[in-house]
Amino acid sequence: MMGEAEPRGRDMAGYTHNRQDHLRRLRRIEGQVRGLQRMVDEDKYCIDILTQVSAANRALQSFALALLEEHMAHCVADATAKGGAEAKVREAADAIARLVRS
Image (tube, rainbow, N blue to C red; front, top):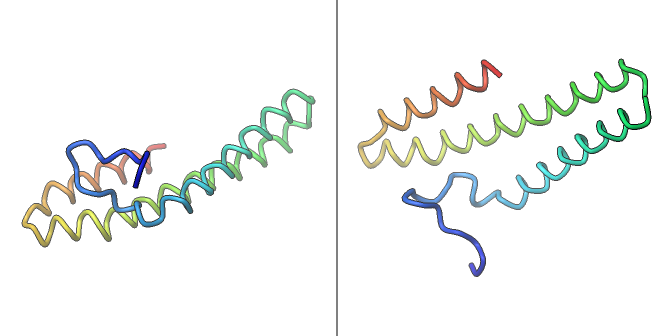
């Protein structure tokens, strides 16, 4: 497709077939963060802001988990079929560790 960059040195991303859904989801999260900025600018009550921070965090975590699931289903499964599963599983485990630490 014209204007879409090819992944550099990698196979097609596991999320490619859901790219537009993911972008819509990220734009929604971006809107939540802008809403937080407005709340601070308007001196809203701290607990109300914290409630919205929690909602934005949950939305990002949900997005990350969906992306990880697609990675496991596509990239790891593909690597398994091609005989390179160990590296992909390690890569996925590292990604899970980063998510857990965040």
